[in-house]
Length: 351
Image 1 (spheres, helix red, strand yellow):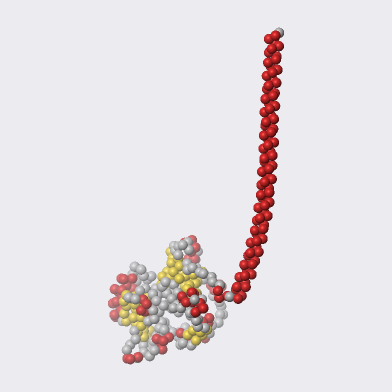
Image 2: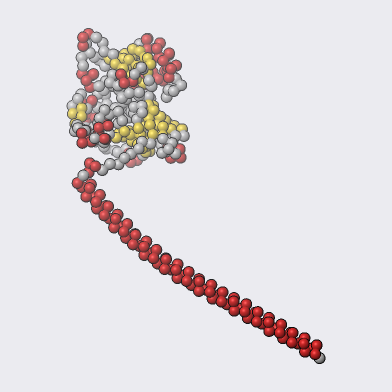
């Protein structure tokens, strides 16, 4: 009996101890849970306050930006109205023209007059990825915006515009020197020396566009190209002055080649063949014929008497680095005398 009583006592004590441990554990767990809940509530409150503060700050900053933008627009509007000439839009060329025309002299005055006049527009890969040209091959022609980079006054015009004295009127070759307002002509000497031309798209090669019918000199910086759209770019019923309608004013009577030229072109062709835009010496000769089918001389050269000092005047045309020498008589008949490798292109810029 004593043993049984002792056993019951141990059991009771064990149960009591177990209950005590469970109670303590439950109490500790409850305390931790309440503490964690309180911590979470505090964290949530802090985040809500932070969000509210950030929202208010963002709204305040947005109002500040809006006010600043409005003030900037007002200031710019006042600047534009009082000082238009100070506003500048810097533009970077996207490519350069590699042309058959080595100098300005001989470069056609208008596009598509010389169908064999070829050029290669080479794009700057840092500005124009090849994918930019996808689809251009579907068009037959494209517009080209470029800079008249060989104008003698271009540096002064851009760097010191106040010191540049631009002439309001220019001499028109078709009118034998009669003056017209610069905006009634396509003269390169303009307040903003940017040119617009059109050319035939021959082929697309990665970062290059092969063109024909060009009136661009070698090295011309290109600002942009756009596809030619006949339905909108060709204006039916457009009117022009009578002096523009005369297509034959600068046409010559004939172009013939001397025997000296025929022998010289064979050796000269070997010097440029690999880099040439043409497939043969005969095709290059056809280019010369097309270019000289128009009187490319300057106005002062055309007005100079042919028999000055009884010395025949020899003129020069430089194509792909070859100097083509020729003479023209009073009846506008041209005789191409010879061809040689050009030594200094600057010497022929006004020939």
